Length: 115
Length: 114
Image (cartoon, rainbow over all chains, first blue to last red; front, side, top):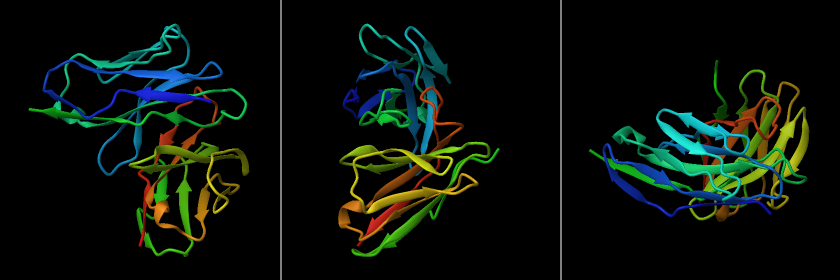
């Protein structure tokens, strides 16, 4: 079956530090990949996506590149802000039979950015 | 454009009761999915509906059920509530549910079982 593995948190950084959150996946088909962010007391918000190999998704200074050869989709940001403190989820959507029409999520990574 | 709306935001029930949660998708979105979020299991897929038809279902007992109406609004029902059903229930919508479309999530219903 499909699975997503994210680096264990929590991750604590100082403001303006470089961020990497690792994400690798297993899929039976050719999935689309997503990063979602969840702020306290809220639902998930789409941060970025990539739908085919070598695509780079980017938004609000965050980037992730779809690497089919390493089955990875690592999230990066060059300079984090206190407002980036949240839980980040890597997810995939696989068009294969039985897997379609749903997202498979990683466990989430809690990021805390200190001023 | 209004986002995904879930009601109620908070719910407290006791074991053995049943509960119905509601989700109104973004206008024009016909696919609605439901997820359960708990600290131990993370985000788990419950089911997905499109044009009033369930197209996919996760590994949950039959106590969990759902439906979708002709206006794309969806409800999920949990019968004979157990303590382990305490969770944040998230609804998401997309235009057709195709895998390359992002899902848009509501803020969830937090269900607490006493």
